[in-house]
Image 1 (tube, helix red, strand yellow):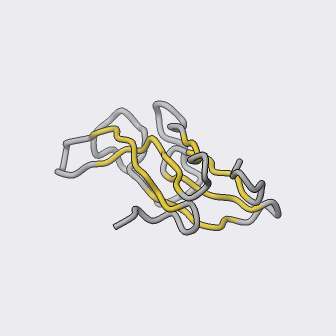
Image 2: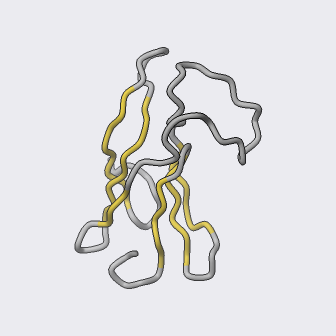
Length: 96
């Protein structure tokens, strides 16, 4: 929950999402899925569940300006890496 109580951040299998108190998505940070098989195919169905962990984790900073998420990156094909990413809590973008 954000410090001011206006949104919650959820870390899912293929994205980190901020949801408002009305249940609407405020922003989404997409990442590679948590499935254990490199380059396994997706059908394009957003509801498809891949094998492996369902999600990572996330936490808001104490001042509410940033949030930290555990996500999956693939900087090079076949080079799957788990990483922590800092995101702007207002829009879900990585600060520049």
